[in-house]
Amino acid sequence: MNEPIVARHWLTLAAPKVAPAVATSTVLILGRIWNANGAQHSVGNAALMVVLSAGSAAAGACASTGWAGDSVIAGTAFATSGGLALAGVAGYADGLSLPLLLWALATAVAYGIAARHWRTDRRDSLAHNRHMTEQHTEHAHVERVEALRAGAQIESARAGAAYAEQLAAALITRAALPGYDARAVEAAGLPQLPAPEHH
Image (tube, rainbow, N blue to C red; front, side, top):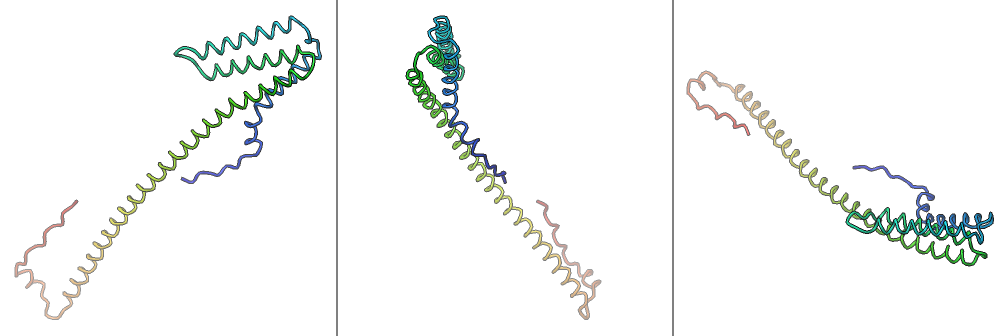
């Protein structure tokens, strides 16, 4: 019932929020490094990136259709396609304005997709916490009922023990009275007490 309190580091909390920007910035930087190393105006390099980007997009389309479509694989394939396209433009373009424009667009799209997943995760987390609270409340109620039942049984046993003590004290007191004759009582044939019923 007592769950440990885990204090998460601020970097752990911030990492998912900056991951889309870090990913698109990394692709842009690598594309510009590639541009500086001879990719600029290279038709072969541009054709390679177009083929790779189109292949990733086709794989995403195939993964998202049909009865066995997988949204995670489709999303990964589309993100790879976009990253390859951004890297190709960053590597092939003359200036920095078009790569920066595509970087801003890709970052905005990445944050839009990530926000959707963050909302889903938050909704699932809230539903799980609500379910666990209901379970704890139900178990606490059962525990209280069992504690009351056990307390009633203990009180009943105490009352029975007190009665037995009082009966023993009464028998001892009666035996100590002057003129008490146990044989005369036995000879009188008093009825036996009924045996206690066992529940």
